[in-house]
Image 1 (cartoon, rainbow, N blue to C red):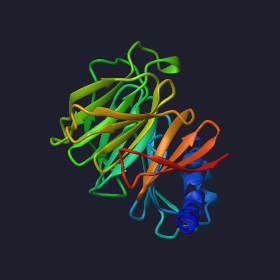
Image 2 (image 1 turned 180 degrees about the vertical axis):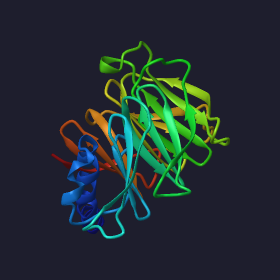
Image 3 (image 1 turned 180 degrees about the horizontal axis):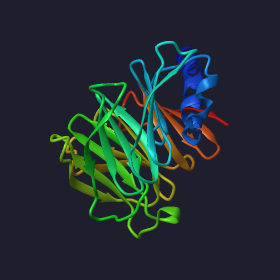
Image 4 (image 1 turned 30 degrees about the vertical axis):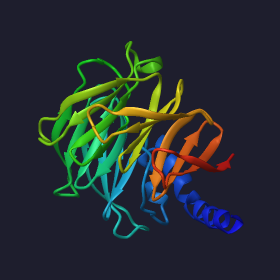
Length: 258
């Protein structure tokens, strides 16, 4: 048992720097890019305002999507800046697409030309007129947490599920009521949703449009998650909690970093 724990801790601390970088960058803008001396790729949190795909770095501010070529990490090159919309909040890559969340819609961009992403479609939830939109995509489905309390306005918070088979015409196919949702992520057929009121909600998404809660964890106030191999790295209000998700619907806490 001590050997197993030692292996886990080694892996945890190896990815800790990456985790801190990805989580803390959620609140930063692109102004620091000129001071970059290295670029690390990997999985990111759903609340992030930047994403790396291939040799390109994509950042969002309140209205714009900006693209940098980071083939030479010490000398990032600005390739394009384009207006996306208003109140842009998050960006999440999936295969050859970017999913960009705002307080009103989810924008989907193609990376066919990675230096100049082009808009493909817009996903709208008719149940919520104004909300906050972290979003992740899995195969032909996208999941978004739509938070309507606090500064986001509105009256109903939901987990929305979109059919994105026709990427130019995404359609909401399902929804689940939640409390105060923030970040989310998935591992296989398990979806993890951070809810400040209810805890970390674990959904079975074998039937993607009708996800079922199979477990709720209450080890802290959850803000965002990064599923990384067989670990789930959670940003909580007091620091970081790491879970073993080798059984993806039954996370087991293995470390707490305050």
